[in-house]
Amino acid sequence: MEKNRKRAWLWVVTPILFLVIGAGVFFGLRHFLKEKPNVRMEPGIGDSSKVDENLDGNTTEEDGSETSGGDAEEKPSVKIELEPSPFNDSPKSANGTISSTTYNAVAHEIDGVKYVYYKTAVWGTVEADFNDFRVKVAETLNDARGWARAGLRFVEVSEGQDLNIILSDPASLDGYNGYCSNSLSCTSGYNEVIINDVRWRQGTDVTTGSGAMNIRDYQHMVVNHEVGHWLGHYQHIDTCAENGGVAPIMLQQSTGLRNCGTFNPWPLDDELWILR
Figure (cartoon, rainbow, N blue to C red):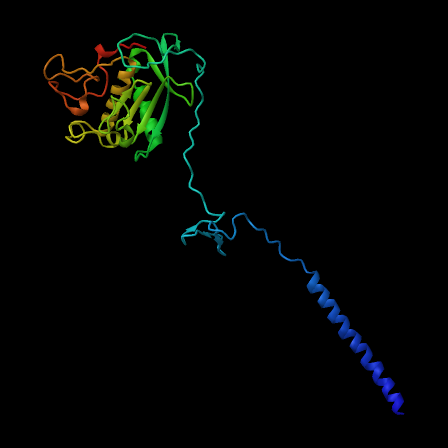
């Protein structure tokens, strides 16, 4: 009787033990066979250039500052798309020095119109909006009151330019050459018209500062004046032909009217000659 009880107990306990052992083996194998995360070590981890990634996707630099993660919205950058000059391969003679020599650096003439291909650029750090500068320069150069009256048409290009028109911070002009200073705009002998950023935005005391000229007329004036030098008007005009007259564009109006009576941002009729 006792022996039969032991056999019955074994028949009950044995399956339970097998179930327990089988469950343990199953879950044990599942744990060890579970896929581990793939940890990729980047170069530099552990040295002084290490950055820690936060849960929000930002990174913390060594000094504790945070920079945005990959999903941060980037500010759009200014992209200027211009076509190269169709006359890019045409021979051109460079004006290496400022002189009174007559030359034909701009040889792109079609039906009596001379095309001047120019490129705009920035030197240093400027406060004026560069795109606004480009638009206003183009407006001035092709205005019917300006050098267009001399049979010129100005076209902005990305390469193959005859002339560089540069918006510069004053520091970049200081000591650049004998014709430029940090207080005014200038023309360089290397086919460069250089516009001083501060003057572009503010004018001068005797022009916009005195209320005699608004800032847009000053901008017309400074572009026309400096481009006039590049076109062959190397010397400044010092006085008006008659007292109280309208100032010629090649008079240095930024510093005063001399004996003239009226500020003027455009070339006069007797100034519409060029050496290019």
